[in-house]
Amino acid sequence: MLAKDFDLFKQKYKENCKTESSNPVILELYSYILKNEAIDSEVWTVGGGNDAVVRILEHYFSDEDWKELEPELENWTTNQLEIFTECIVEGSAESDSDDLNSTIMNRFYLLKKLLIIGEQRDRLRNDIFLKLIDNIEFLNKCKSITLEEATEIASYFDYSERIKDEKYQDDITTITLKAMMEKSGN
Image (cartoon, rainbow, N blue to C red):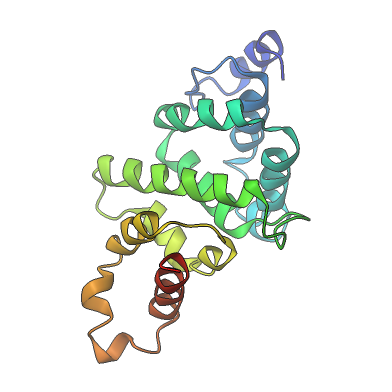
């Protein structure tokens, strides 16, 4: 979406429009989230909204666009970030099973940034973190996580304590984190 087209779009959604980007690809992504954020949540879960966002990321984003998107996320509303988080962890694309899929890893890197923003927003609960908990299996798709990155993500879950506690041994979160840690250590 061109910046001049987005200016017209922005007028309709001016109360919730917080982006400062002029990047056409980021504006395309943001406009999709913005126009659908107030619609029934089924747009995201059942209606294919999550997959549509992932397809935008996969088909239109260059390496430079991914770099520009990360700091831009700071401008988005918390609700928009929660929707976007759900999209990147729950949405899928044709190439998700491809071990060399850079879109999966770029989504992972954005997830790290989203978790930091969620903490900084100082809400009673971090819904961005909760979206990851609900979709923890996303981490299984991330094939090239380094040990440092795995440790960083695991720290959000108090992994070192969790692994010692018997009540969490069969928990899907613990199992997924353990697999991620083991895979990254190899």
